[in-house]
Structures are given as structure tokens and as C-alpha cells.
Length: 178
Image (tube, rainbow, N blue to C red; front, top):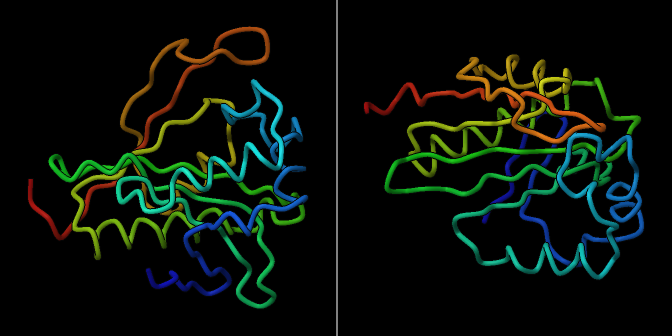
């Protein structure tokens, strides 16, 4: 698959050889994984490589690495999946592991690139994202990328010793009719 090219990012399908010490560090950093499900168990080089390997060739789950266009530095990942071609829908989820890249618009750019791929190449009707209500960075990035609020699941998620709402956002392909 051809990489997705943005102004500052290049997204390409992640491969096991992309998994290194930086990736392991991200997945074991409580600040990075604060809103990720991987926070519930320690991550190793082997477990992360196994995860990336399990998605290779899976046309319904596309895991893209986010790489800075100017240096090739891997800063995080964005996933489009479970793609449901029957309903024309998919979920999107992402994280940026390199903290010096937080709050710089990279998430918005990655979301826009993957959404454009979902609509323009895959012809999907709708892409949705669910996230912790306290995850203000995701709220900003998804709204900036054109996503609208689509729902809220009260007390859906275990979070920091209590419960948290899951916020749902979505975007509809303007070129596809229902």
C-alpha cells in the first residue's frame, strides 16, 4: 500500500521492524498510555511485535505508523479498523508516543489523512472514534479534522480508580449517500 503523504507526516503500514526501544518506552509510559487500553498490562518488545505482526495482511484493521516527513522519525500510530465494508464504517484510534510532538497538530493531520483514505480509497460512509471524556487532546484533534459529536456513553470506562464517560465522534463521507 502506498504511504499517505501529508504536509508534515508520512503514514505507512507499520511493520514488525518498526518496533524498537522507543515504541516499548511509549507503551510503558503511564502518561502516554493514560487513555489507552494497553495501560492495563506491561508491554514488551515481543508483545508489541506480535501485535504488529498480527495485523499484517488484515484488510479490516490498518495500523499506520506516523513518521515525520522531514526526518522519518516514528512518533506514534493511527489505526483504521474494524473496517466493516457491509455497513461502510470503521473506527479510528491513535496515540502519539513522542511527547515533544504533543499539541503540535500531528494528530489532526494524521486523522485527516486516514479519514481521506477511508472515504476516497475505501469508499466508506462513516468513520467513528470513541475516547475518554478527559482526553482533551483527542477532542481537539478530532473536531479540527471535521468530526462531530455523535454520542456519549455514561460511565462506560474504568479510569483512574473510578468511571469515565466515553465520548463518541464521527464524520460522514460527503461523497457517499446512505
